[in-house]
Image (cartoon, rainbow, N blue to C red):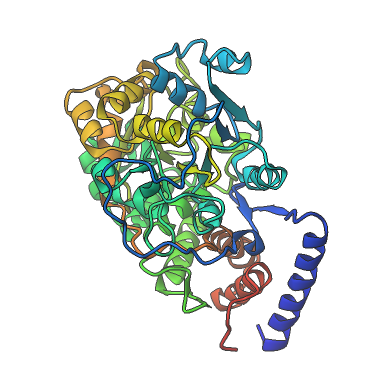
Amino acid sequence: MNTLKRTLALVATLAMTATAFASCGKEEEKKDDNNAETTTAAQQETEAPEETTAEPDNDGTIDPSVKTGGKEFTVVAWNADDVPYLIAQWKGLSYDTIVQDLADGKVEGVNANILNVQGGQASEKYDQLFNDGSDIDVYLVEADWALKYINDDSKTLALSKLGLGDKDFANIYSYTDEVGKDSNGVRKGVSWQAAAGGFAYRADLAEEYLGVKTPEEMQAKIDNWDLFVDAAKTISEKTSGGVALADTLGGLWQAFACGRTQPWVVDNKLVIDDSCKEFADTVKALWDCGGVTKNTQWTDEWTAAGVSGKCMGYFVSTWGFGGFFLDAVGGEGGEQYGKWNVCQGPTPFYWGGTWMVVNPGTDNGEEARDFILSATSDEKQMSEYAKAKPEYVNNSKVMDDLISSNTVFNEKISGNFKDGQNYFAELAKNAKEIDFGGLITPYDASIKGAFSNAIKDEFLDGGKSFDDAMETFKDKVAESVPDLEWDD
């Protein structure tokens, strides 16, 4: 890609940005090939945080600058998957009726503003709420666009101002802590869940085609990406290309991207490191031998491949085992139900997760603090929530205790695993090994999506060279992140 082309992309993007500002600041949303919502770079850009680089000591008291005593405590979320149940746990209310009770205004002093949109659409809705001066005390953000708010002191409050510090979050998984901190290392958000992933596979097919009988033996077969490709080739050869080891390119990318050792942007320049070429070579080998299906995530074909037996394994996160993955086995009582095991896979990874942040304009500092403590710090509350929801909570001590006591978190989900395997025990291994220190940038969502699209559309489907595919990738990044510097 030449300088002129990149400059023209920048000019075009700035023109569109100006138009967007003239239209009440609304930005267009984009979806990557994995159907994950992403945001434009203009959405990601934020003001430099004014906080200091060190977390101040605190004695558990709320800073005088934070208002308290407001009439109604409002939590804002894009759907009702989590917030109602977190409120129920906090207030000691029934999980069975909490959604309707909140909708009917029966929970005194608490309002759950459920926007009923996809997670990727929430950012625009939040901006509207802030612009309108709507009541917001606590709201939820996703990892892909969390920094838009976490790096903006006018939108998120340092949790230290609620009297919350390291002692309150001593056992949260380190990668979740990194996501919740601004560019100065100030903790602005905290998650109640850890979304660590693993590789779930058909145990009967693994024994038939790879000769493995236990998750430990399977892990040894796919412990790195070279071994993963070798295993996929073996399965393909033995099935004449009829069975793929991996579900989708999207699933592979979710796992592979967590193994990067450099951030996407360093010194305001895009970083295309060796891992990018490694991913391209890995997926090309799998694509050519039929080791990964050519289905797209979130489609019927994606899950149908598991039901039919054409796909032997899925990259799954904690939240997915009772969701899309259960669909991929045909549901409880389906033909493939109960035939699966899970192992760590080629690399530790996470997929998804949600963080609580606090509006600096809150007038309910005490309720915000107590709600956050209930969901993310109180070990008794978190343990009960993990079992009742069920949820893989963001507390290593709580999860280790529950796993070691062979807790059955959900009978339907647990029943899908051969020999009663404790699937959370495998995910715990990855949760402890994920290391995101210094790797997170505000542009990750758009850059990751542009890269995976370039690999699929240009390199795999288009037959272009890796270098040419990367030129397309750079073009897309130049459009979405116009302030980056380029060497050519």
